[in-house]
Amino acid sequence: MSILSSLFNGQLIASDKPVLHADDRGFHYGDGIFETMLLQHGRVRFLEDHWQRMKLGCDRLNILQPERVLMDHELSMLTRDRAAGVIKFILSRGRSERGYRPPAKAIPSRLWQLFPEPGQSAHDGITVRWCNTRLSRNPGLAGIKHCNRLEQVMALAEWQDTNITEGLMLDTEGELISATMNNVFLVVEETLVTPNLRYSGIQGVMRKKVLQFADQLAIPTEQRAVRAEEVIAAQEVFLTNSIRGIQPVIRLDQQNWSVGPLTTLLMQTLESAS
Image (tube, rainbow, N blue to C red; front, side):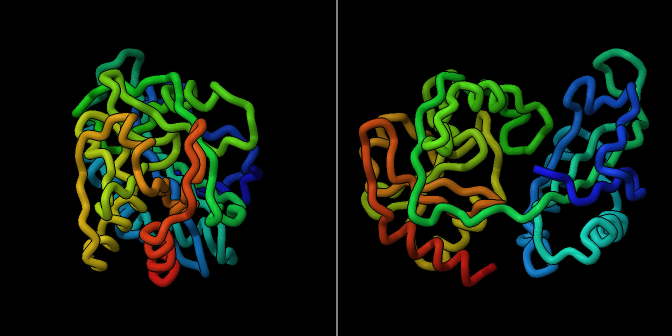
């Protein structure tokens, strides 16, 4: 997907121009965080929720968070004359000498990229599979969107079938965590269930919004450990992320689902909120 515009540390740059310093810790160690956001009608959907998650990541990794006024200014520079697209923001800890130990006063690097708007989400349903790659457990990194994504890279390399949109991922102890790029929800006996992500996974912005919608609609919810066999037994299954919103799952291996009433209600609620 082509890059429409790029911004590095406050400067607009050519999209094909190298920008990272050779000693940047984000490049060497994945020492940073990122956000992927949807630009719609000239504004970022659920922007405040993205800022809150970025703050959580900065606090957890002890990276200096940029001032909000600076971030708003750079976002405005990136998106001027654009009403729609996908925004990726990467915050690296910055430059340092060789070695894992971070410098005491690192100056973070900020990279913004704007991509074309995505195609239509698959509201009629997607096919998923199980991934062989397992997610490791690390409570210190659980929930945040850090730049170390090799497990997801390995998982997505497992198949080339374009009919399969996503892969569900278990952790090393056999608990369902997420899909490679999405959070997972099940409908189990009229209760909305999602993995609690206490050991791994990303606290997705869309996951957060769906839980809020469910509360507003008086739909019972549970955030808990989920085993693989519960997925097959669920009445409805859907995936969520910030760009695609809510995508119903209609096939996993030999199991088939229709787009259920609770999933449909939540998709309608999201459409109204957007």
